[in-house]
Image (cartoon, rainbow, N blue to C red; front, side, top):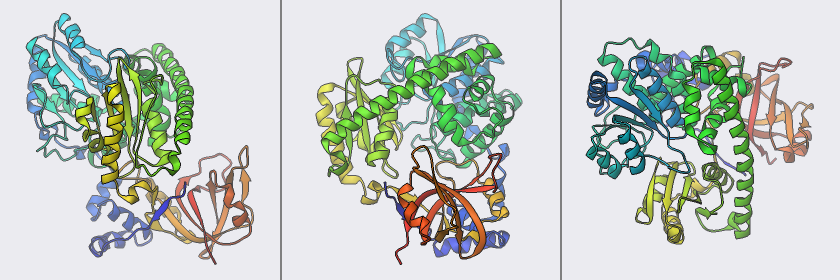
Length: 576
């Protein structure tokens, strides 16, 4: 799909703010622009950005209700009450439960955890589960990555003498559940400095506050930042502020001495001995943890993440790897079925601004992935629904810049339940309400989406000549890690490059181009790879100029002739 290229334009004010940085990076001009685009305008803030430190984490007691949460937890432990750690079945929820459960195990034994099954019990907390909890004489539940909309259920639990501490990061309603404490940086009126924590991140802040209140050194807790890093990457929360600090420290842990369960996954998916990146977490580690909740039970993921025995961790990792293989097969089949339906509808050329698709036989654990695939392919906000426990249950995904939470919320009177973020929402409704929901959802999207939000975009951070791609630039770009929303890997554009004469088609079907390029500023030959762009090869091979946008990747292959490679995102032919 052809994408629109957005070129960088710093305002006059941004240019002035970046003057100090420009002097500091005089030998590497693009760096100051990259920093200013990220809101970093002083040498001091640049040093903090390039060298994240745990000292830069915020005081957890800045979060509303933190003092109440810690007081209730301390009281429960002092009174020997049974405490249950409860969470969602996705990566964020299972890592959050594993972190809080394992950390509290160091100090307390009257402790258990629970992950609901996706199919029998569904998302969040229910009355039937609360009845089970009451029968076990649990007095305090710490609920993670869910619970912010469970008003009736938590009121029912309170009537049975069960208190809840909610640790959530989903968008709350105006009316909040009657919990003893609600930890959510998105609460209206909250002044917590980092409103975009993951669910596991909120759990970490609770444990940080618990440690401070009891005078406990936080070294043991900091060893668990690998779990937080996995949640941040998998839940795609903004990689800014303390999220970036926790992801940075967590990645260091993943690469040096990870949690035993994570170590087993790393080995299983072939990352042992390699430098693990956020991309590896998103595409290899996260999907395996997620597959447990999608295909079987999220409890198995927690059991893996809290394992203390090497053999047990390896066995559980292999089981979860098999779930991931099964998930891939289902994902492929259902995506193909969905595409066939949409092609029959003529969706690619439809004037409609959104997609809502329903099949009662689709696997509930896969529909979120399918929604993502459809959004990528058609570049429209998409909702995919299936039948589960008598309700049409689904997931939605959005395009860049469009708040799909508000779109779903516009039809809340037709829904049984919904919750999520601006880019992803889960929902359920009665089958008979699907046509009305489809219409209302489309009306909202059509009225509110901007034309540019329906066109795939590539944001170009800076223009480079090949003479500016220096070892110093490469070294400084490494310090921009870890990458994610709010701190994306820089994308560059070089104009009027030409084939050195040695570029060639590669791949099983000769669908990719292995590039060897030059420009007018340098005699250097720069290597690159352009996946699925064979249609440009004739133009490239003719020696005519073209423009490229790309990211710069380190080339770690043993036989690499160059320390870097351009990962070409798109090619534009230059019209002479």
